[in-house]
Length: 207
Image (cartoon, rainbow, N blue to C red; front, side, top):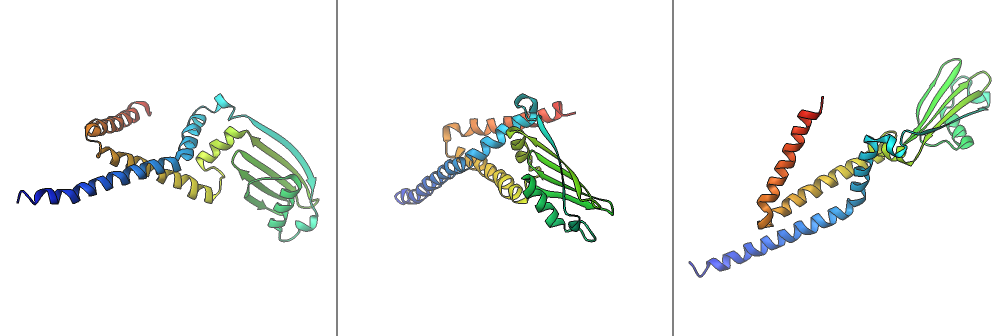
């Protein structure tokens, strides 16, 4: 029986080595794949918390005016043509967040990260007033961080995808810890301490 024990140990040893290598590979390449996303959401977390530090609260407001063909506004308002005419004429960005009309007036709002354009149109004359509010790159990145007016594709693919990627990075790093015998206990205790610190901060600091 003793002679057979080393033979049984070898397959287990190979499995251990292969699984350790797999965790290392997974953690390294998940980290590299998520590096830019992790840095983006980490840095914009700071700019969101302190918008005045980096000018994220600064805005530029432009007031414009013009006139549309009244034919676009009679009876059933051609919303798509109205929106695209204004977009082309003034280089408006974002998507149409709102479009409302009554018998006297039409109102539409273009929204994008760090950007808004509000249009009020008189249906009888076709004359309109347009207010464009734009922000700097920091404000745009802050809105991208929050998924504000960024579109469903960005929110689903980038924000949700980055969250899943970061969770996998953390889990693969935690799993890799169990292959490091000398650091296993200290690493787990550090993770526990970090969790306790987060809970204590929540209890003490949050009103």
